[in-house]
Image 1 (cartoon, rainbow, N blue to C red):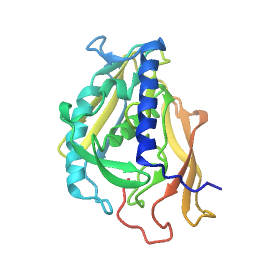
Image 2 (spheres, rainbow, N blue to C red):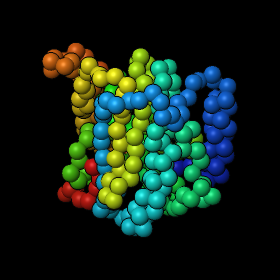
Image 3 (tube, rainbow, N blue to C red):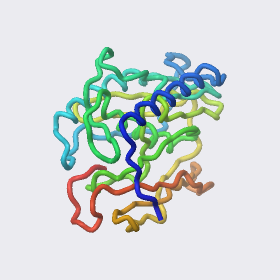
Length: 272
């Protein structure tokens, strides 16, 4: 049973955001965490994970200008993250690398989600970048130390290629995606925006000995006492050695999201 969503007022949301941002800034400065940064050395010639997602989708009730502006925002964010290198023991902070997405930096109004509804906002659309980065990282031995799930399932599935709930929502700066390098190797992130896709890759300084497969269990839709629907699953990851022998099977996360559409309706325009 999932409780009915609470829709907080704008003032409370504004005050809460200021408090959590200040707390995150303090943590960045005082935690003693070694953060990753852009480096050209040492070389990382071994491709370990790669993924791409389309820049524009046909989404229900979303004006196309929001997606066109999203591409502008993604180019800026990809430029800030491309080349970030993790030495052993270092942590990549998504928002520490990108910084606050402001108009002064060139960010424009794109698609944001607020209480499950699509609204325009400066820097909107950057969750596509954090989603891609999280998915790629699940296919490496890097450790995800902070990730926030999407609380709403906004669009019906349409040609989904990944399990539900394998993304990472982000909101500057306290809903972050952080990735730590607990391996002895150096890792470098590659991100770019092409004509049609957001493309990413993880490279390492040494070849890797494991291959990963991400899958879901216990996927279900559930009617709630307050009249809405929720969607749930658990995401797992298998690891295989170079001979194809499974050596691990671990829980990655649980997902619980309030649905903003009726799951009993025919499949419509959604997202993968």
